[in-house]
Figure 1 (cartoon, rainbow, N blue to C red):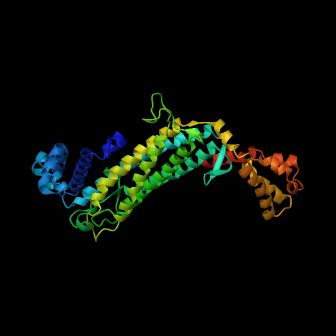
Figure 2 (cartoon, rainbow, N blue to C red):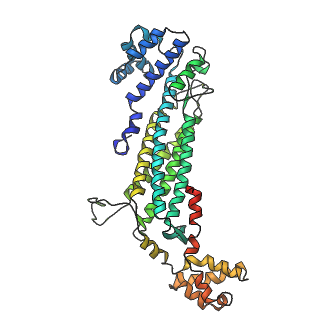
Length: 431
């Protein structure tokens, strides 16, 4: 995490202060459960809540000697609690604290990411309806294909990010599990009730089988979900970057007063925010492979996953949070140019209606193969000689003997291609 690409609410989840606070709550709730089972005195559990404190610098100091963060934490808390601190961590192992804490942190991070997705969805929906009937050219392979509307483009992204939200919601549910089962996960020295009690208090579900650690397939799926979201973000960012190219310029990022595009060229207005989102998406996807490799731990546990997660968990969630917020702002302020869209669509002098002419010929009794040849030979004149497509078709006797010139002109109707936009919008946004 670096401040440039961090937002405070998400970054705070991964602070030392927050992590140790969660550790303390886990330990204190466990003591409450143990007191209910009469394993420890109720007065001891109350004292732990009342006197329990910790100091981050002091924990770091102790850890330099113990080389063990959980022991350093427990030692520091004991300095505040006194004799009753002997009841802390009864029957527990370090992974009970570390894994359950990570689950809490990832669940909280998920809640922020879900809010981020909601904001992005709202921005896309607003702009989609604003541009629902704004004609623009659809492209395949980067080449003019057939007309669409700009709003229809955005509706597709809305549907995609709505799927992302559902995946994020499922990933949150899958990651939010509690494991307090002791060494090798057998509950030999701690009653399963403690796990159930702590899970409820911390807003988690119980891990069915924790082999001393929570199975890492859960974490792999979580980070894979972040990676998919990042890829969807990059797809939208790349679209904006293409549309802002000087020779296209159908849309561009908002350029604020006083903003500078280049240290050397005063005229520049660059899609820097979308480029930034593209770069951050690469980072988030980069964390997926280590998470997948963390699944294969030795036997009931090892800690080869630990160093990985200490880095990728904060970095992936903080980066995605920042990028989602940035992309939302880009969409919210995106400047669109309908006149340029129309100009670009007409650049190929009617070629975008070639399929409709092809189909009309087949309806008139011409074979599809012959229809294709007739349309294509006239289309190539547009590509190679700069001719007008409708003019060439109207002069081709092999075509006009099947379709009258007046009927050919009717095939060049833009509304034909946008007649089902409302139907698609209802599918995406509902009634």
